[in-house]
Length: 152
Image (cartoon, rainbow, N blue to C red; front, top):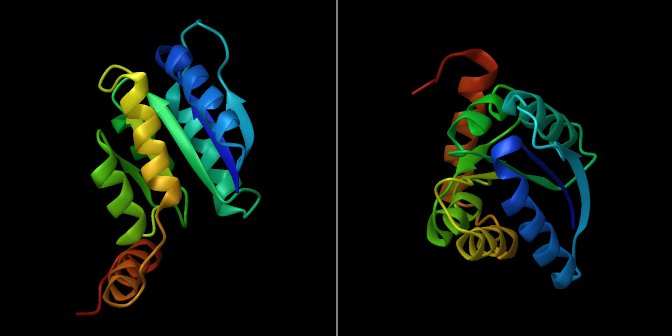
């Protein structure tokens, strides 16, 4: 699996731990879009970089980390075709993939610790989209994105 990972300045330490964990898993190729500096960095930049790689099919998915996970997920979701979900525990991360076919997982460096972050990433990576009734719902989400309407 090939993943892109990005962050703002608040998430440097937790990103390093997540990268180490993913390297230990051995089943992931990572593209780190930054930042790798403690200087103030706008999360929207990393969100856009990761989301573009995912939307363009250059990577299979993405991981985004900012202070809360909220801002970076909002920015990523502005890119057509992205379903970025902010999760603070593994169960929601798993279901975001199984039910919503999320293609980016987000979390907050100020919300979760490194061990929970690793569990979130593992749960998301190990889950598979179930399709079925969930495919219809994901299609509805994409219809709203494309047309700004939902045929009900």
